[in-house]
Length: 164
Ligand code: FES
Ligand code: FES
Image: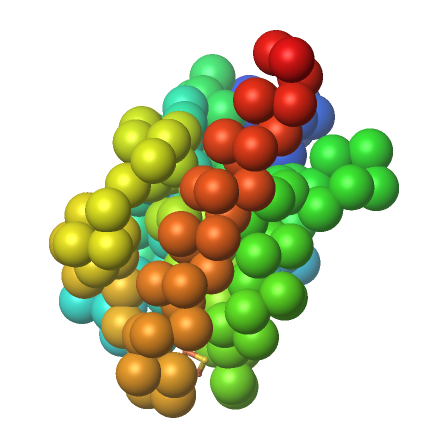
């Protein structure tokens, strides 16, 4: 199969990729872009470790062909902080120590970011439901849920302060 040149917008920058039709997005990110914050867990869509955003939606990069990302915006954990400032979700994960080994942390943060973009003030049940496809072997999830709820509160307070 012949490779094809495509343009993607990776972490806010245009990139030219030369990809084969069967190249997985996860492998292109990790092996060609050296963006190893996106993890290879199961490789079959069951753990969530490979989560990235495409055009603002969370997707599993182990099940996504790179060639299908032509002209799309891809966000990995490396692109979430802007202008040297952590995203509120990243700050909340630090504040709540919502990690142990850290293997799931990138995907949990990106899923939480997607959740708060969709539902700015989720209930605990909504957080647990949204994150149910992302597995963590270490934390028991309680600190991750607290971090997600804490980030929501922090963002609501920031909006309230800006409106005052
Ligand atoms: S590595 Fe993609 S879901 Fe597990
Ligand atoms: S912190 Fe280890 S898998 Fe989640």
